Figure 1 (cartoon, rainbow, N blue to C red):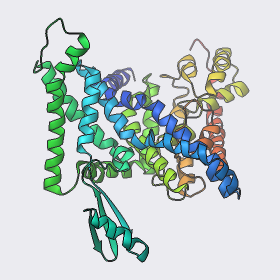
Figure 2: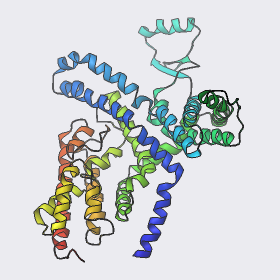
Figure 3: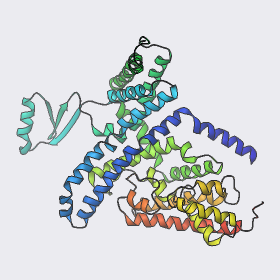
Figure 4: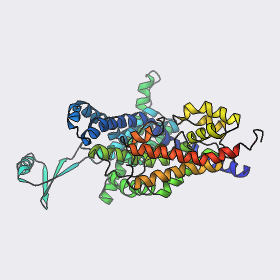
Length: 457
């Protein structure tokens, strides 16, 4: 066990400290204020517009129209442009990693990403008598209008029109790819001193700006050339190509029950050896499941309905249904200790941990019991979250509860988290609390068994 533990910790430690993965993780964390602001806007509109309208009170939604519109502005400026925000954050963190100018690196990566986005927008509308005059007027303005099978397509703009899907969650994987390429070129040229050097009398800010001109220009041109060549060879934009052949397959794989169970189990396994499981797996959990979450948010914002959300399981689903009280559903362990434990040290830790456990902070339990390398509690520690995730997954797949579509602060108490993350669905809150009860039933026999173990052992 000792030999396995050392090897496992060495491998996981290398994974957790791999600098590119750390940059991805830190970039998603840096976006938290943006994603939370957008989610607050969506949730407010749920309670100000969607729920009152569904309950037969449309006049209330009409009265709240100014607030609803403001929430729409907030959504557009946050979740709607998430890929743009991530592009800057990722470039910033990669530049920190390479020890070059981080602000310039973030700006260059942002510009490089924008340069790869398609800049034309096609609007299709049925050709009717009402719209014929409008289409005729558009042709008079010199715009291209094509009619195929009764459907008119308008080439609205060749330059400057950016579809929201490329700037939002769909563009995250493209921002990731472009970020790696642009930051690499920028850092490589900077480190080789292929820069414009200014006299020492020049202010530092001006000196840094001039030093970034050549590396930054080269980085933006490199990504633009790659995007152009891909379009010429495939007829698809870089964003569409990555979305079709990388992002969509990965998201498809992430939606299987087996994938959800595996990731939930691995988080617990890392924690068992004293390694922060969420941090180690953040590039996977955030890079894939945050995309699913924001796609669901965008779909709900467009339709105001949970009926056709594209993804069953998102990043918030883990926290809502399989991490109540923190990793291992330790809030259930605390309750079991209060009711059945005779060990004073366990009860003391539980008393200190309970207030924080309600808000999903469980380090006092994890390291106070401790759960790390504890053979007495290893079985429930490893199996409780996967079991809870399975229950919630099946309930979502069966249509009993809607998928999670709103980001909620992870410190939100159990039950309330699921209620808010699903747009005020009471059944989702009940499933979360039911999972907490199931976890309590699983933890209880092991708490009772631990009474037979002396503290000195």
